[in-house]
Length: 208
Image (cartoon, rainbow, N blue to C red; front, side):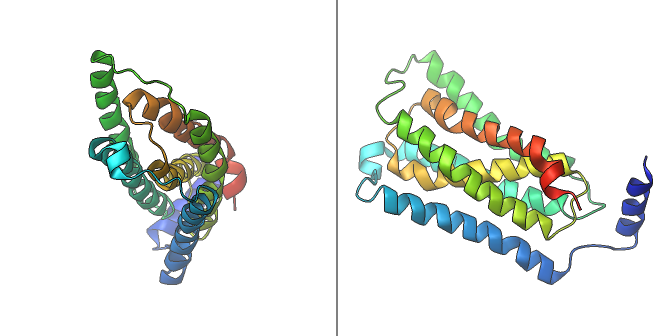
């Protein structure tokens, strides 16, 4: 254990934790990033909103259920990681739960040989994820810097998950792609890619 690790442990033991003001400043960039993505995609795709009647109640519930759950869990995980001295393993397991749910549905979908992949809107989906994920990721990085994360790679990874989840939440209502294979390839893989980038960039973006 390095001297820096020892210092951080002592700070945590002495109650060094983000103030209430820092907690509020943590929340603000997350909200701003989510709103920016939502309004951005609404403006760009004006008139292209896919209603529940078009997409189907089940697919819309699955896509939004996954993305909103991941959004909330990753935001909470980022907050926990940003508080020195607190165990984070359980939160990392929590953010994996939505992925396990989608994996189970994907296995079921593939066993039924559902057709329609990749569909007509996959290029627009990838573009939306590629443009919006970094915006929300940046908001999560700004938020994390108001706290005091010590595991910078883990914080960066969770920030990437948040970025991808926000992008999916904002774009999913405009997309008719409903098969689980479509969700896995054009939503889950971009989210995991963003998480990987966050893991790589976390130490550089979040270092004190």
